[in-house]
Image (cartoon, rainbow, N blue to C red; front, side, top):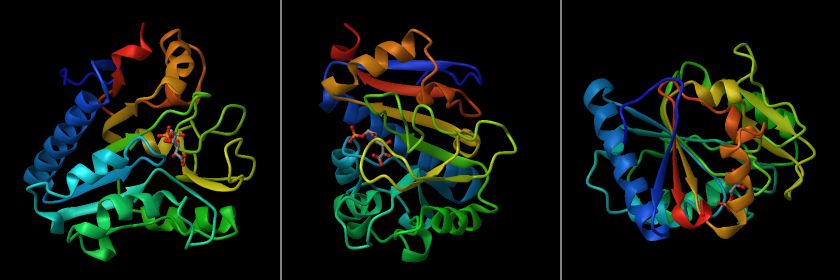
Length: 233
Ligand code: 6PG
């Protein structure tokens, strides 16, 4: 990774998905080692969606002190707790159910029918967790990230709430909870994981400077975007 620059969006290009996943696993473990060395704790925010699945699976065998990891989520779908489409369900099945991170240190966003109630509850969970050490994010084909969608409130102003309730997601389910831009930006490091042909247009819009939600994200030391080379040609 390049030297951190608070204003820079750094694009890291990889020949294929496997190389991107290798880089992501290394970056996550490097961030964990640094945070644990400096603060005896690693506050990590997980991206939802499918892109991170194999990266999470590969973390199962990581040589690390899991007792110092604290897991948070960038967003969650408001569906019954048994639903497989929950981001916390994917992370658990792929990784968290297979490592000894204390269950009290895995902070899932409450699922269920009420996005506004879940958002309020999660805002309480986030109190005092500032900044995150590393935030992982995905990119939607419309340029969304987390559950920050075009045309909605993104919570950019520094005094924005930490969490937002979404009732009109264009990607099912309609109700979601998302961390705000302001809260996501309070991260020492932010890494986007961008893979898959469906992201081509969103990547082009982002690099052309268009006002998409992903572009509003800027951590304390900039942003690192891991992207497959095929999406840039
Ligand atoms: C979600 C995610 C969302 C996701 C992107 C990319 O709940 O869906 O938080 O922001 O990261 O939509 O999803 P894929 O990785 O499945 O392409």
